[in-house]
Image (cartoon, rainbow, N blue to C red; front, top):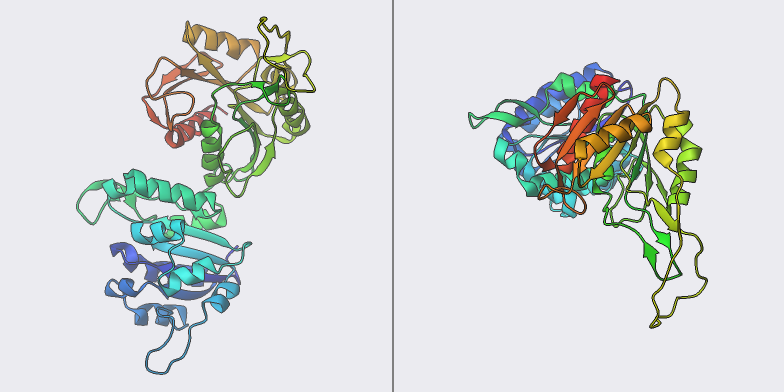
Length: 396
């Protein structure tokens, strides 16, 4: 994959910058053409001379040479590149990339990348900094823009602490880029997310409080693992990850037809959408006016999407459903698992504070077809998404 590719290697100001020399050399050994961009402060950690010698190209740091007035054309650099790799990616540079701050040549070049160009970033920072909500928010924002996160690794950090935040090793970065370390690389994943709205009249509808956050988090996590993701989404205010195939629907019927059209091509199906069980038998063409009499609306059952796919799935397809329960939770989830021929079910409870609709966190129990149960503590939905995918991997 790297043979003959033009790689812009960005280096920001962190102690892991010393690894840029090894990374530059490794990229060239793979047959890549490398040009290096450095933030002004990164030169305190590794010299431009080292990187220019290894890359066999001048290192770009400033917009222009103060002595000669020669201009460093960031647009031409961006057009030259097949992809951009920022390693290390510090908290400061990640924040600027996520929020449109353009105060050095590296950032100007990043923002000038043609839309089709791929950008990777490999965070490197201390444990607590890496876990800080603001940093994680910026990382998610970069992913939403279509950038590819090369996850930080666990190990000894410069501070002496041990934990997550260490920049990925050079070999792992190359494996990530070449797709060797992406366990879902050849997997087509179909996800449903969000609520459905069942129209009563042109103004009103029957719906639920689902935000879609869980399904969208699963989509992001699956992309990180290399999956090709199709996301069928009910109405939500969320922005889908840049590299998913997004299909927007409104009603349960629309979601059923979208699933019916796409489910046969999927290797794995994760249905997290909160689909309405009932829909008005008829929709009024005009807004129903308020009257003193009680209003009666006849409801009819919607198509059971999960049951349909469970009845028609192929032998090699893996089907995951969700159950949101308020009583007899495990028993009801087990019944749904069996009735609908699922391989795995994710049980949510409305009894847990901070879990369920609208929250950024969730608390789940995962139950498989052999009735093995794994209960998890309250976590962010991004972390829950990883737990779900791990459960799929271990049982598929």
